[in-house]
Length: 435
Image 1 (cartoon, rainbow, N blue to C red):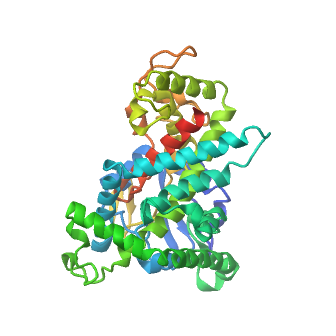
Image 2 (tube, rainbow, N blue to C red):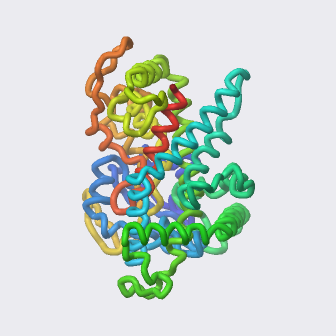
């Protein structure tokens, strides 16, 4: 890998766009190479095959998280995202996956998504007469409102909680800390002073988020109990007594604090996806007309009375879906997954990777892998179709194999647990906005 410098290692070489810099370095050092980030040894992983080799083939060895100081502030160290790979995390993950699946299969998530979509479309229909308006706060309210109602109850509305709404609209000071890590975690203590002010703002925001969530915690507990009674899932039984699978440190807050995590991370990422998607569609000639024509033609032929687009319509709207996929490929809302951490030595891509090493999966590079994508810097929805849709509207089938060649929600054991909800919400909002 690149030559390291005293104390900082390679940190200062990465600049403000580290995903681009690490991808550029892969041309010199292959797709997998060593780095030093402050006091931590690290490995950068670029390209689709190398990411699969390290995070899927060696998934169990690379599934943990480093013991970063900043991670302790998320849900008081009981966060799903930042938890080490252990029995507690496995229990959290299993429970969360089953709850999300239940919300989707029962139609509860779809009902809330359509309610948020209708509110957004109705709001924008009143604004279109003005020359321009800021889409950001409206999309934040639509996305955040979806997650808020999922977590706290269908009848709980984000717009009625001004404190929660404000914190979701305010910029998150910690967003860019997740690129390659926070200096508070990576550097020796004496060099942390320069980052302390920004770090403290991030801590204050997380503490305030948890404070707001604590006011709603009884509602979360009620929803978990209802889910347990309806599905007879045993993983909620005796959590308070720490008796599930004899896991001594399992606490009910490992489940009850999940909404705060979902609201913070999910609102920010899905909002970014939609804003980038609308930008790409607006700036790429012909795309907006193609999407509109596909949607209009399909909805005019629907047998039911509704003219809105539903998630079940997705197989019939390949071009619309391809725009979503192409946006996710181009912008990679989280260019790096959160850092992984190795629990044993292993060898991959010709490199011996030692235990206690940070793994930096460059998800952005996967969407730019030249072995898969031609002209990767361009927004070309047609690349996801088996046949290019003609301007007058010819048949075009969705090429599912293409969607498996990039990983906007991560890959391996730490793949985003909220991916099904994110994909569903993004499709419903985007398709109905365009219609």
